[in-house]
Image (cartoon, rainbow, N blue to C red; front, top):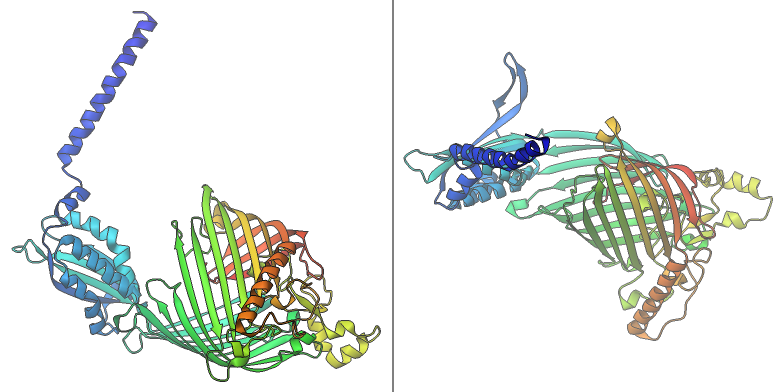
Length: 596
């Protein structure tokens, strides 16, 4: 036989051998019988009812002679709360409904935030293994409900056959592990050029209703302070909302960049959706004192004084495309977050009437293993009034409510913190030559604080912020190899841009003119004319944003943390405007998590 003939024979027998192997594999599968999933599909819609739910609580793990053991421990959570969430399990009529009811019950209990862990297992006759398949698939959803109570460390749910002479019935066993009564935390971070240290203490499930009591404190290197006491009740009385009450006292020092500081005392009452924490509604009521230093610009001085803040804020967040909200740097999916705030909603709060809207969107997609594309964009609008009695075409918006650009925290790398946008000369900058020694004697601390974060040059202009802004950020993210990649560290190649403007200055130069006074011509009479004037200013502001958009690009490293992302970058400024404070070359920055 020639080599050609032998090759042809081998080629002819190859398909036959493949068919024989396939037939042998099919025969083996037939001997094994139907898969667990196939078994479940056959019985999932047959009658099945739960006749008993057994709950067991475990304490923390203890080292014993036989290794780690967990002893039973009485539950602090009241029994009626568990019964309320498990009622739906008793109402199920088929195996499918039993699983779906258990999934929802465990999800609700997770939302109470009293459990560290929840395990759900199902066992019934005669398809024991089949039920385990579904319990594993529904475990995360079931346990999530229990976890939202925030009082359990561990939850285990087991559905057993009960009894054998009733094949259409079963029982549920749940093993729960509550979280500790007290939790302490702390950390340090930097934002806006100020380093801060934070500490907190949380007491959980003190009253047995998944209640949370917290005290937090934060102190910054520029005398900024933030103290708050809060109370939360996840899924109050079985509803889908979590009420929150906060008593707060804050002091924000913006003397370095804007020559003003803000002290606030008040309270905040709000509700958050348990199923979607991105949906929230809060009302803030407090007394604000805005003070300035001796060299503040005229626009800043014009806003010095006391204010009553009474504002309602609504936040909505939507996401999809496989986005994982728990990740600081998601590699898939999209998110939109809209925040609306209206101030002046109380007697005596007319001085602080405003409407503030901000929209942030982000999108990410994986290009290859460890490589992803990220795009983010933000825009915002601040109107200085909403009632005809408090509106005038020359009214300035409130300084703390304005939008400030510059730095990692505002997605505009390559520029100093609050280094982009409308600004105004400080009065020290207009003093006669040779007066530096006298000014140092009368306000040396202010002059020292005016040193820029980079380069040591004094800051001679107050950042005023903008009533309207826009920014965009695009980056290629690459996860680093080795242990750094395991920690989530990424390298990124980025480009970002942004700009802001004041409605009062629309059509003029926003970098050097005053924002506190100067009457502009009214656009017609009455509220309708005022709206027409605002519309004209918005169109003018849009043109100004396009004409003054700043751009920069660079490379760097991103370190994700629980509080946000820390970045080390090298930046090139591509376009800038007069009076911008640049941060070329190497720089560090931190951006806190905002739910993106």
